[in-house]
Length: 312
Length: 260
Image (cartoon, rainbow over all chains, first blue to last red; front, side, top):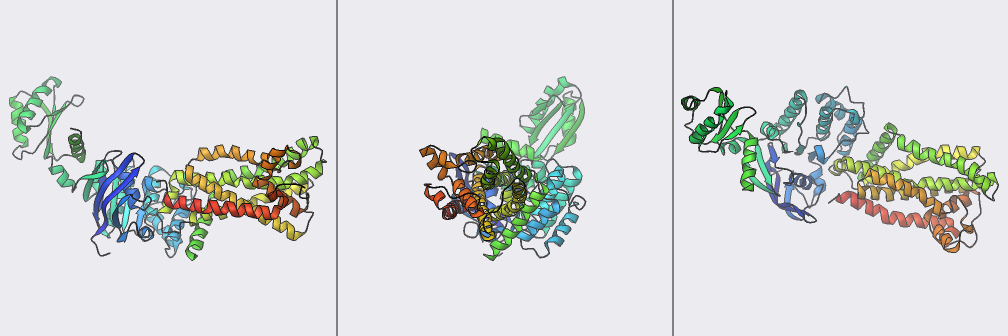
């Protein structure tokens, strides 16, 4: 591969009847990095991946995936990609071992049985190897799914919500596998609705909105757009309004109130706001604090803000 | 071409393992005709003009062909299940020949059909059916039966990829049960009113059934029948050739294009 980009698309368009699912997708994923493709339902994430993974043909635009032209050489693209999750399933009627052996054979891997054994071992599935995959738990199924896309180390891996809903052990194992892959040079395109998952795994984030990439950047850049998240928890629910007034004055942003938790929060880009000053000001206003914090915003905050901006 | 053979072989193995791990549909579709042979042969047969044993000899080839026609339903069910579960998409992202998955499914179905037909043939022998012609002709009859099954499975694969719905395949199962009723599989078509006889004789099941009866030596080719039934072997081969020429490319193209 000559390009530093394992995925590079320009102006990809796809229409289903009346619905324009993709309206010119420009996406670049560098080798050895994890790119989180985020967006609300209907933003076009699934269509984007289905196009890039050769499952659908675009109406217009062009792309190179793993160094091959998506439209002219889809067969070459398929030799270098791995696809998981909702985009491609393992066969529930076959055992874990049978699945991996089949995929290894179809990928022309030498010694498919040995390769299957290695992967089962690596993903902690050896014990369940000879049971039909339909009997696997969610976590086991997800691990088998990932193993199936790694029978030959892919240059580009399409991952779909790989850790959502998993127990911490399974989650850790998958995260570790994804980091190792990226360290070995694989480009990972991760689609998810969960920002926490992208925050954990992604080097870069591409936010999709209505069939296009709306924003790109690192998770840190995304967060710095919003500055710092200030939150205080008060002892008496009646003082929430006073706390909100103080936060309004200090941050210049409209605070959000959570009566359940008796919490008041706001975002600020004012770097001079420190925790002691916050506590002093609230104390002066007669608000008894239970907790106060200044922290970087989560991607959820960013996400909400950016989609709110769109709605406004 | 060698890639197609290799990939098709891998897919064949996968289909056979799938049936072995999950044999329910196979058992159901293969025990059905045995019970029909017994019910039709002894219960309905007693009301027909043909003597019982003669009718059962007449009926068995019809049941073989009617069972082969079920290939539409099993082919559709398996293809729809794979498409619906996302397994088809997994195969479509793999560097394999575009014809390998449907071909593997259709060939695996043939292997399973060979095995599944044995109990029906044995039951036939037990109730008085015999191979009354030469061994060569009997082999030809079985070859024709498998060719017909192969054509039916490709129709099913196409429909399964088109609908992606296991329920639709189940509903079609009821419809394919009706197809042999409008043919000469269970009763001679000669006695049907003129237009109905024409429809029944242009049903591919009639040509293949008549060819089997002729080759097994169970019943003569009826007089004054429509062309495919009057020339049953040529008629059957022509039917299979036409159906394969239409549905193999349709199924492969559907598989390659996906749903969009």
